[in-house]
Structure formats: structure tokens, C-alpha cells
Length: 419
Image: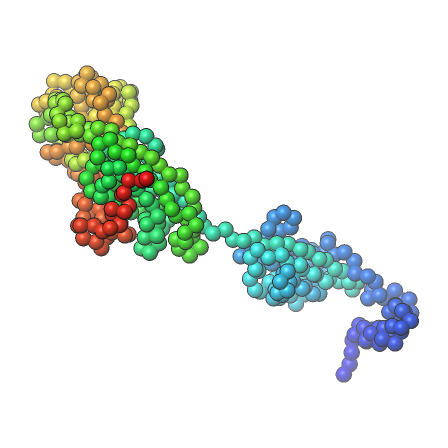
């Protein structure tokens, strides 16, 4: 068997160490200055790592990679192990230019990596690196309740916005079970999944007048799905005022306003004309604006056409996000009570609009009947939740979809007054 000159030198050196160990003689040959006789130099400038150092921590999802910076030098060996003594498997390229790990790094571990190199003359180099890997953060599902704390009308739904989409029925059930709604007096109600990131809660009927409602989450720390855990959520306290209902009959051109079931005003109105018919169904007051500039271009009506408009509008009570209001319309007083001439809003005299504006609050009910328009969408254009029949509403719950009309003990437990 033929040995290379370098191997013969190493073997001779090893024998020399064995024979002269007692005398403490160093393996230095005859002083010919061979590279192997020198102490390894610091190879800091010869290799680079992709691992974070200092206070930063490496991502355990990414492989460790070490490369030779100098084309005239090469990596000869790499040893990587963590504090528990586990070695990290890796692979060195044939030309010694790159080493990479072939097994996953441990999370939350501290690694020591020893790299051996040699330069173009065969002189040995060494570099040691220590680094830590991070613990991959569990995804946290955050919940934001709405609306903001305050007093609302009896039609105001409670909303829950999720920070991460939740799709599976089992995961949705975990979330829904942790979202607690308490009402005093108690009512039967249910959450309904609007989409993967949004839920609405409403009672079977409107909230009672002058009720107290508390909304909170017990989701923090609960596993929702693989690597997804619940985070903290700020609780919400709401109350309701009197039960205010404004019912507009587009056929008779009259609005009847009730407080706690008693009529308090009847107002002549005009609603949407053919082609712009006002939406039927229950809507909820979204907000009030003393002044709004209304332009036909915002709803797709081109300027200069017969139906175009650009008007200053006062005492505007919004009921859809797309621009349906109850507002003052002094230009149509002659038609109010007798004809529908608007572009979809409910118009009335300035004095009546001012009274209505003062009387209603967010969450109050505004219902339209006998219009030629479509029914108000349940979601996406305001709060049309009340247009969904109760049995269908319950089918949007991950917990109650399979239950009958009578409900279950969960209903009562979810809505008991807080103590």
C-alpha cells in the first residue's frame, strides 16, 4: 500500500511522540518548518456562518451553513453539537467550500461549532462559534371585541375580530366556547361565524331595553389548532338604552317611530324611486353626521346624467356603509308623504330630520317595509344580522348548529348575568 507524503509525516510524528513522550520532546521534526508543525491560526477571516451571534438567536427552521471565504483555502472538518451533547449531522462539499447541516437544529438550544481549515499552503486554521437557537413562537390568536364600550340601541350586535383565520369546525368550537357573553336580564343568543376571522353575536330577539352586557374571552393559553394558541383579549362592557324602532313604510310614505313599543312620532318621508329603491328589512344605526356632502359619483352615477347630484345634506343618520341615510331633504318636501323620489335614502323635512337625529343612537333599529328594493344584506354593508332567521343564524355557530330550536344548557350558561 502506498502512503502519501503527508500521511507518512503524520505517522512518523505520531511514533516520535510515543517514543519521546517521557522526555517531553515536541513533535517538531528536524526544524524544517513544515506547516503541520505550526499551531492552527485563527480562521475568522476564512469562514463565514449564517447563524446569528451575540444577543440574536438563530432560526431553528433554517439549516446551519458554513462557507469558505477565500478560494485558495478550504474547510477540512466541522463538528457541531449542542449543550446536551447531541451532534448535528452535516455534509461537506468535495472542494471544501461549503458545509451545511442535514438535520434540523434543536429549538432553544446552545450550539458549539468547531471548524478546521487549511490555507493554500496547507497551514491549519481553526474557528469556534457558539450560538443559540430561538424557541419558535406559538402563533397567538388575538380577539378584539366590538363595538367600543358605551350605550347602544337594542339592535347592536357584538362582534369578535380574530387576528388569524380559523377554519376547522373543531378549532372554531374551541374559539366560540371561550367567547363569553353575559346579559342582564338574561337572553337566548348565539355567535355566528361571518367568515374565518369574524364572528357576530346577537340574541334571538333584540336586546332588552336598559340591559347590561359583558363580553370576555377565556381563550388565552388554550390550544386552538396545531401551533396556534389563544392570546389575551380586552373585555368589553356595553349597555342598551330604550328600545327605539323606526319603521318606514315605503308604500304609504310614512315613518313610525316607537319608544319601548309606544308610538312617539309619525313622519312623512320619501324613499328610493324606481331603479334606486330603498333596501327592505332591518338595519341598525351605524352613526350620525351633522353634515355630509352627497355626490352621485360615489354610488356610480356619472356626472352630467339625469340622475347625477351633488348636495349638502344635514342631520344624516347612516344605516349602511354604502351610503344609505335617513336625512333632511328640503328639496323633496313636496313629495314627502306621497311619492318616492330619492336615490335610496329616506328623506324628510329638516325639522323632522333634526328630531330623528337627536332621538336615535347607534344600534337603534331602522326597518323598511313595502319597498321594491332587495332585502338588506346580513353582513358587509352594516348590520343586517336581524334579517337572518333564528334557525339559520344558529347554523352559523360551531357549537349550536346541530341543536334544535329549544337550545341547550350552553345557551343559558353563556348568557347568565355576571356576578
